[in-house]
Image 1 (spheres, rainbow, N blue to C red):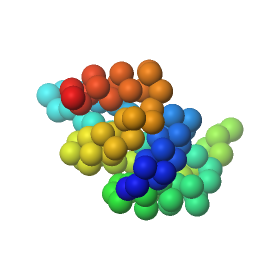
Image 2: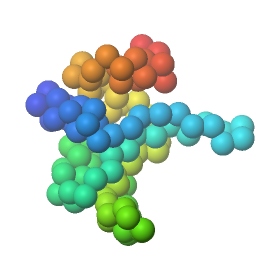
Image 3: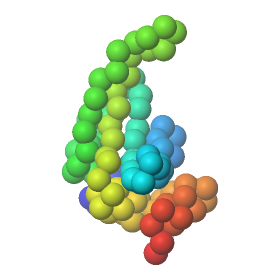
Image 4: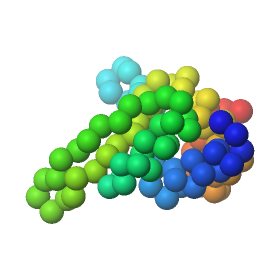
Length: 102
């Protein structure tokens, strides 16, 4: 991923994404995900990152159908986070450093 792509991906994650660690019993899961209605943007995010999965979520109740790109392998999440870190805002940068001490 070049710097322009990293900056674009950082902006997308800042606006529409989440980065976190979640505990399930004794297991910890590290996740990066972006969910939105724009399939083409989701596909570009996965292409730029070079990893992850895309899932279509049907509309339910008042919610609209969306596309969700996610990375659930901790090493891949860490790699992407390190590449986009220089372009992230203070709050998400702190979260990335909390999950992946650098």
